[in-house]
Length: 126
Image (cartoon, rainbow, N blue to C red):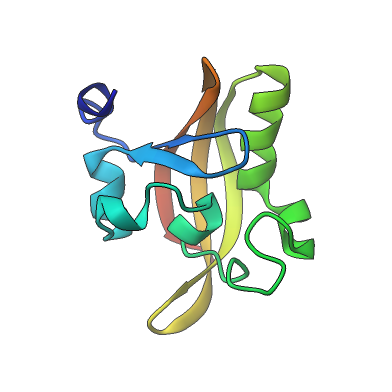
């Protein structure tokens, strides 16, 4: 699967039914600036550095998670099998300079018992 995912230029995360990242292609690891060991088995928000993922409730369980477009699309794809193509998402992301809003253009697709999350675009939100 890893070899197959690495054939794609766009960042791709393979996510399980709980929102944990199973694997990521090379492009995702490079764009996230993370080694595989900091991606595999971590919740999606932790991998993407969501500003709320470190709260006591944990990634996927905070009040902010209920409104998270990325999480909602991934979970909806699991539940319904529906693919979502080129959806806009604004996410509060933290980095060394602090939290800031990022714009993502994402797609989701169910593959067996996982969801492929493709990040077509990511940039600082206006």
